[in-house]
Image (cartoon, rainbow, N blue to C red; front, side):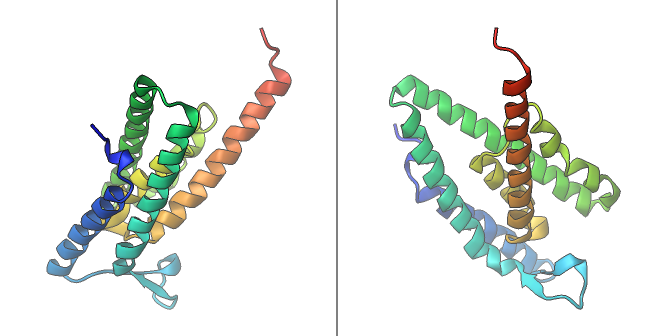
Length: 180
């Protein structure tokens, strides 16, 4: 049986469906939101409609990268299933993180967000969190509250910083921790 990751076009279609449902809900509950840069009305705005393009495009790129990496490492059926399980767990963890941030924003608990958004950077000191499935989960978790563009921008910046932190820590370990 083929998994969702083997069908690289189904993941973007699923993302399109999720964004479309969020936009329909927005449309029927007061209108589709336009987010302004730096949350200032005098700055340019980006409509949540752009999520219909940006999120499926992100899902397509993520599906491609996961598919490519999956077969690069091994072709054993058992290892492929293990890889798929790990990818799914990372996706779910990032999805839960994105939903948590969205809920805190919706509940007007913004004072917690500057600290919570640093969690992936803290985790990067101990393990890699810079995977494409993490970015997709994070974006889909935030798409209803923040649209499709803002989460991609924030998530990409977090991913890059987490990658740099993780690489520096691994380099320091190699240099300062003797091999046993």
